Length: 121
Image 1: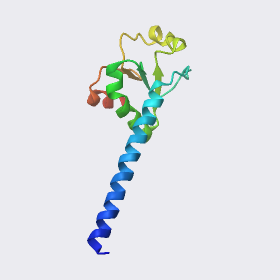
Image 2: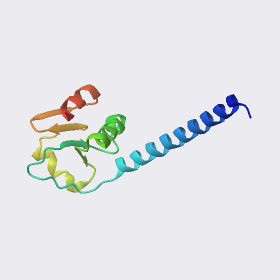
Image 3: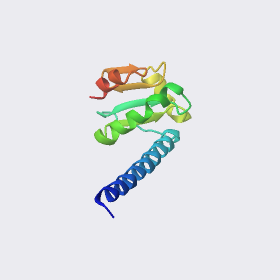
Image 4: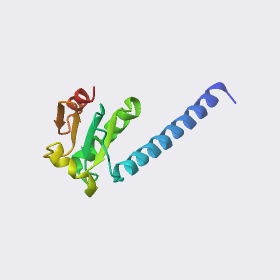
């Protein structure tokens, strides 16, 4: 077998593995997004609070980016507002819409990833 054929086969295998891994990762994040755990927040947490609803189109459009950003920084608490017991945070944090990010005194509601990343710093 020539070197070119071996390299070609190796590249084909790598591409297939990357595609399968990407699909599996995407499916896993979708699974995480649909979970509705009850979230209890520490009083003096320095984490970024990400309020979303799993049935919200705007939330779905940015969820993956926030999830993968958190995979690196480990500083985001995901709060699904479709969990009835999480709705007490609406009044506590004066939420008017989702998606909303809150970090200390900074907050942003919307889907502009640049602005969201500023809040996440």
